[in-house]
Image 1: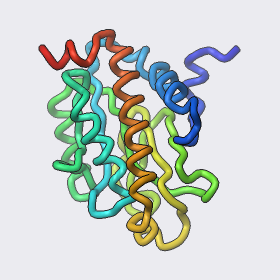
Image 2: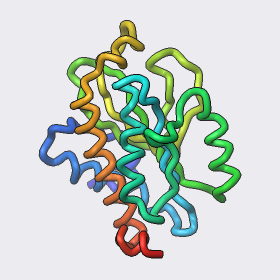
Image 3: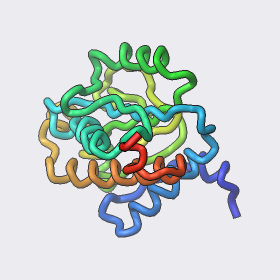
Length: 197
C-alpha cells in the first residue's frame, strides 16, 4: 500500500461528471494540506479573466470561494478583481510581502485532449498559466488544481472564447466546494465559526 507522501506525488485527474469526483478531490486535497503547519497561511490564487468564457473558470471559482471562506484562507482572483496576465506578477509579490511562508494553491483553466475535456486535475507543484496560449508567465502554487475546459492545439484563444459556460460553471462549483471542504477539515474549524471571528 502506498504511503500518503507517495500518493501526493501522483497527479489526480477525474471527470467532473464522475459521481465520486468530490470525494476523490477532497481526499487528495487533504493529503496535500495535512502536512502544512497551522502557522502557514493558505493562499488560493484563481487565475483567469471573465473576458473569455473558458478562461473565466478561475475567477468564477474565486467568486464562489469568496462567499464561503470566512477566515479559512487568503483569496486572490474573483470576477470583481481577477488575477490575469497583466497583474499576476504583482499579485504574487503582494502575497509574499503580506504573508509569511504562504502555502499557495494555484487554480486555472487549461486546454487538453478531447477525451479529457471536463476533467479536473490536482497535483504537486505550480500551475503554469498561459502555457496553453504560449504566454510566459510566472508559475503559481505549491500545489495546483486545473480544469480542462476545451481542446488544445489549434487556435487556442478562439477555443477558450467558445467554451460552453455550462461546463465552466459546473466545474467551478465542484472545484470550489471541494477546496472549502478540504481546507475546513484540515484547519479543524467550521466555516461558520471562522466567519464570526
